[in-house]
Length: 151
Image (cartoon, rainbow, N blue to C red):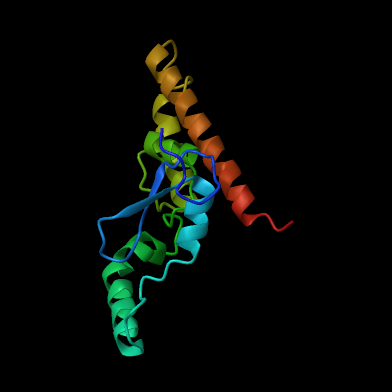
């Protein structure tokens, strides 16, 4: 086991860090000293101000697709604000992720009417489907109430 390269540290040195920019030589620090070393690391060291600004601008441009995924711009209910349970409930009702609550209500009523126990008495599959639609609607109704509650 290799020890941390920081003088006097007896912790395992499992975190490699470059000794200099573009150098294959590495220090091996413990997590505490690696964090300390990286906090002071300057990726633009040795560049003049114009070069540093140009590199920073290029990195922002190249990484802009990762910074904000396109679904953040939708600004509807499909903007990532739905939980996994809500997404499963929408799948049960056969709806898209950005369906509003009125669409949910209409889909629930239409599907529930098709498999309601009064319409299909004694049909075990229809009863299970009806229960699934009920649970899905309840999940989405409660989520809508939480979203619109003004407490």
